[in-house]
Image (cartoon, rainbow, N blue to C red; front, side):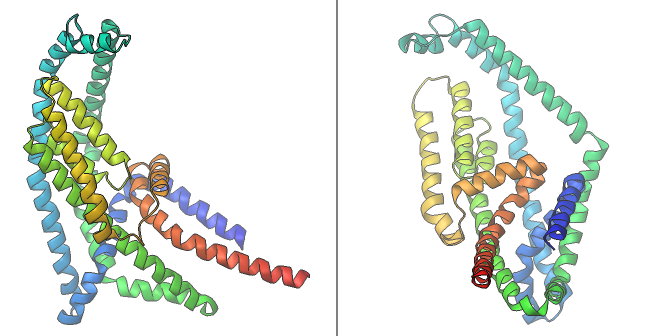
Length: 354
């Protein structure tokens, strides 16, 4: 039996690996359906119609998401365009800062740091060229490619359809799943699934809310400071905040690097403001948002989260990262149950032997 289970897991993993490029709308649709299912169930008690109860939250969700994209994308495009236009200015400043008497040159002399102007310039220009070529190649292969248009259309069309059908048939799906479970272990298995559902639903909804609220806070705060690409960096920091320390750390590093290029070490105030924004964001996340929206009992250990996200990204790219945390949350329930069953079976076996 164990061989068949391992074979089934290997088969499913292989399908997931090879079909991951086309699975995105189905995974997203199922995820959205899972998040909206309790709302649909509550509405159905009042409206009686499953179809209407499914369409109302789905249309509201799509409307909120569309409005956010319509409002947010112009800010992001403006930030990126402004940064690209000012790139020559930043290059000139770097040239002056590296010259004798420049800020970077003085700093290196005061701290006895070895500095090679030509090497730094070569590295900067090399990485700049590589980034530019990578961006151009990405545009040619994705943004301007036929497959990218197909992918975008599939996300916009197939994802809502999958969400609707999964939501509509959610009760049937649960009932059919229960029927598949052998009667002798049905109660224990259903109990385990209920534990998983309680922990997973609370964690996903809470963590998603935390990420969105932090993204709005960081994006708005950094944007108001006048930092180039501040809104984009802040939004990305918030959305990556589900990775403990790494999301915030990357956002702070990028914000500081952009601040150095923009303000050119002319004063300490901009850097103190940026540090204050990230400090407030961490306090907001640690003492208000996460305890209220996620809860300590459902939170995952930071090391487990980092490992899950990195492993998911390595095995399945963005799709792997997307499902890494739900799987990690499920495993926190399944592993203790499996170990308890294993130890119980081992104890029975030892009694028989003795």
